[in-house]
Image 1 (cartoon, rainbow over the protein chains, first blue to last red):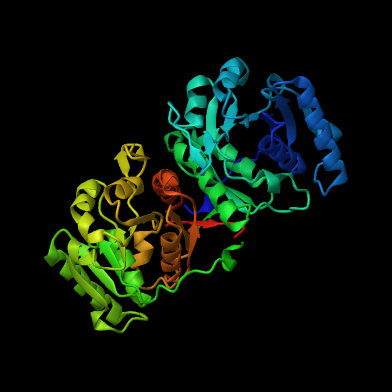
Image 2: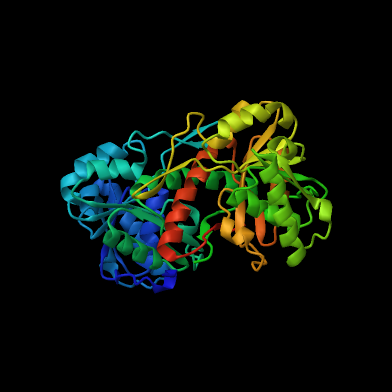
Length: 236
Length: 236
């Protein structure tokens, strides 16, 4: 079946939680989902910082070209707060990824959890992928959250483009990985809620490592070409 | 600098050798480079099979919409024959990759060598990346060929599309990796010789592993969507 023939579920009524919602990636995703009309729960290690980020997002939405006029659509708190959402995105730093998820496991039980963490190191030659014992951040999440429906996605979206209200469409495909087909379809649908994006199924979780690591290549591309690069899948 | 502002060298006069030129990927690349007007040297473990593949390519070029009318533009032989080219593409199976390159090292000295090999395993769940001690096939090549200028590229091109004379343009970007900037620029230029392709610099060789492994994701995409998927880099 071609891309257009695979029916995606309606996720417009689902809430989206962001663990690590005060970082650039989490903040950018929170903004785009809220702008698309999703209810968003911003989480942080510190409830105060989570609330503050939510307040800043509400102000950004009120001042900008948002499809979301509901003041209550963005709330903030600690990561437990964000874990109450229907779909929970993991946007925490790799350092602390395992400990954060292990502590939240009871709260994330039964939920769709979307890991977008890229385990990268940096030295004087630039970025490079870190070796992860479980194979990838996503597989580490799956190992720590056996009661959750773990997918991986949103690795390659530029935080700069996400956060810029002047960018109307974010022109790229989101690669979605997962062993739970229904959960992956929901994540694909969630990606399409952001204007310009498609959600493309790109394999099982055991093939997530190279998608995470590919972010190092995008950083190299951005440096060489002064770009905010993403990818499109051709022939779809 | 933007993509268009980075000047690429003129490689139209350079010959292209293909190690493993009788496999689907090697054969498809040989066809496209010959069609673009490059002189092509097809190599195989067996000189007879290499000559036969070259003969078949010449017949295909004569019957099709080729820019290459020169009968001598495609020659075949063993892998030593192909190693005489200015730019030598490694398109051998992963199983045997190291042994083949080690034996050819003296012949490849000083040349630009382009590894396009994807170390993948397959089981009942589909493809998955194999762990490579050196980090990637390309880094293995670089370790075995210290006197060559090793790059990596052409991992994601569909052999089906390459080999189909009815396909006028192969719609994708070729990610080029390498630590030798001048060599990488030549490989980028070589990619642009195939109609529809761009050659995009995507980092150092130490970031080649995930590009090779990404082929497993493209196979998953092809299976799900009945496609011959490649990628385009956005914002370039």
